[in-house]
Length: 521
Image 1 (cartoon, rainbow, N blue to C red):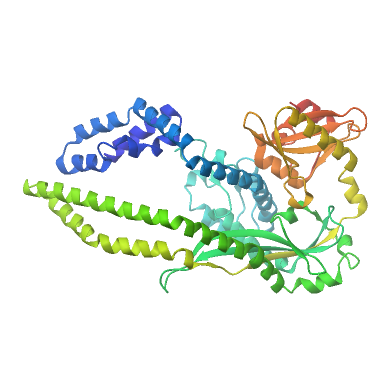
Image 2 (cartoon, rainbow, N blue to C red):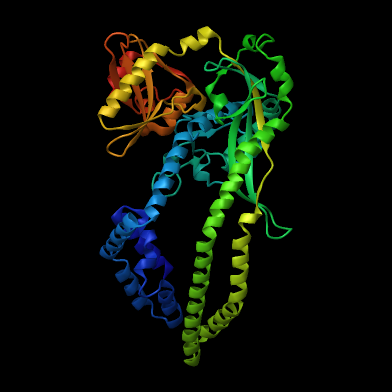
């Protein structure tokens, strides 16, 4: 029966081109519950009749009608506001996400340092050879057909819904990636803890950088249980010589310039910062105060606000279950009286669950009510530190032509607003977003726009962070270049610069004006 059901669902899914068929399966069997149909087929032996009823319930026209009704209900329900909020949160997460470009870059740099060779195109499909024993064991957890097929692109790993993987998709948490990560941390973690020196072209005073994590846990109900991880936040912290601290992007170090040995000498290092570096207590206190406690209070408020509705839903669910069990008991008693052998065993199980239902309800309600109070902060973790010095003036000047950039940004704003777009400025260097503007177009599409301005038609340079974000977001990422800013500014808009321009570059890149003009939309 389950095989018939799943095959029918898959057929409808392919016809409609949507996975939403799984969202309405319960409604399709509202007149005759699915479990009753399976019960009828298994206990009473009426397979053909059951298959016919499943076919009728999952007819394409019926499913389309239910989906249309569902859409109309959602459009007028309060849940629409919740969905809009979730979309906004997802948009922020999408804008800030670090994978896959940064993760791929880390793997590309780390693997050779621990004896792992990369064979093939790391931007597509590649293999690992040679590789240490721990990495080989991780590869052997997969089928032999894909052990030499690895990728950082999800679409290359699983091209179609429900299809067999064509490659191993690497990401933090995946066994092969973790095996390489463990080797790397085993060899180099002390260096990350000790720290390094970087240059930041966007600051005027040096600072310390710490990478830290704050966890929100839920205490177990019993002493022998394990805490549940409710939320983890990874963030950076800037700490100045006078004791000031502020939050910074977690990926900050990836956006800075690596200090050469000459630049990290004694004249570059601040004695005050060196002395502060090992005093981590204030940094941990800062993370608790500015991330941990606000997160704890927010989660408690949200959970306490949801308690009355959740408590009502819990009681309704158990009442429905009780009614269903009583109905099943009546049907099973009738079948026992008719001498159907399998019904007697089913009846005993049904009565046992009914007798235990009140206890389960009380325990579930107790867990629900105690959940907010069992929230607590986990320990603060500090994973790396660095000292960051201002970049030399000539280096900072080389990286930006301030006047031309201002003219370019003003022109882009004027053009987009004239076309009805809504703009959000994320160009603050401290945000390290990897682009200047988030643009909501009149057609509902979103663009992440990096703006470059030049006084003539010189080559432009995109930083490693900007190029990584171009790789991360592809179709959403646009490069807007304004040439001749000091005379007659001309705007060129390039969609997906990573794909259209130099798609195999992974660090900072220089792009010729002729390439920009040829690729512009």
